[in-house]
Image (cartoon, rainbow, N blue to C red):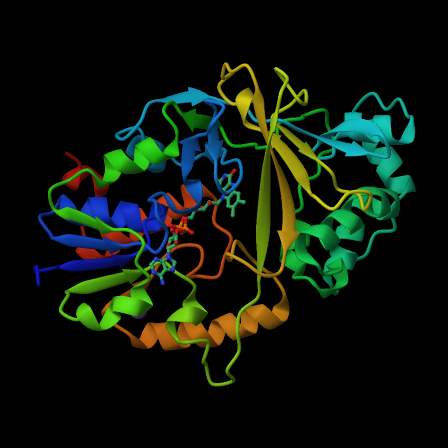
Length: 377
Ligand code: FAD
Ligand code: NA
């Protein structure tokens, strides 16, 4: 068997960053990926309509972190994309995150500025001083009327939990604006890679020291790979320990069923992403990929997202119970000094792409005690 210094499980952002970093300091790297492609959840491809489609849902890059921005620019050119989303609610089309326009349209109002918005809010909101659960946190933030009309059903659809069961810190941060800003993100840098994400990953992994083994589940081959200096595991943490901590419990995830359709028309909807927070339909949103980068094609591809319990793990479910289960797996993980648990699934935490880049870059720097600048080529 070939000599390996660094064994990496998973070819998503976390795995690709560590592979690239270690290859560049002369280490022999093997990346094992169970899917038939690199890129993890960022993977995209050109579909039968000639449109660049993301297999696991639209991926919008947004960051305020200069070191991440500098790093990703080494592997792709990027174009500015200031993402906006709309929602269909009660037959109306409104911008989201909720802002003054959303409230005006939904409730037939004519609020003209932030002061009027805050005044409307105060009339519809009973402040809760120390919210004791997720429902109280969100009610405290947006008030009863908006909660009932938008957030309650949406949260139930997204998490299959009512807010009262959910982690308070997540709902305290739920996107909501008292001005007219209708941008989906607030970071300074909002952008998409010119040639798509898969190309970016190909460029990251294109190094003579890196070998990628696709279609291979690490747990089927792990006995073949024992002699390595370090291992980075980016899969689900509970799977690593065979779902056994001292209480034997599996972590909960939400999955998504992506259903794509070709529509024989130049466009299907007026915006890249349209959300459906209500209970009138089962899907949560429809993405029309053609809008990203104004792609040209005779037909158009749309993808409906249905959130489900079973399937690929996408979203950790932020409840107190899951937090506690995770904490016990984390203790087990910390005992293993030559295995590092990196990324979204291994840390049981939603990470945006820039955070995933940042965490992996920081881990490399911490372990190798080098700065990005010193090792940059
Ligand atoms: P992953 O991309 O999940 O990579 C882990 C890899 O490990 C996977 O390829 C998996 O197949 C592999 N693996 C797991 N177990 C094994 C095993 N046993 N053997 C071999 N391989 C294994 N972020 C944004 O910034 N903007 C967005 O708009 C955005 N949209 C998103 C939409 C959705 C639907 C989802 C789910 C996420 C979105 N994200 C977005 C987050 C983004 O996808 C993550 O930040 C990023 O994918 C994290 O990278 P990762 O390497 O940690 O994990
Ligand atoms: Na460890």
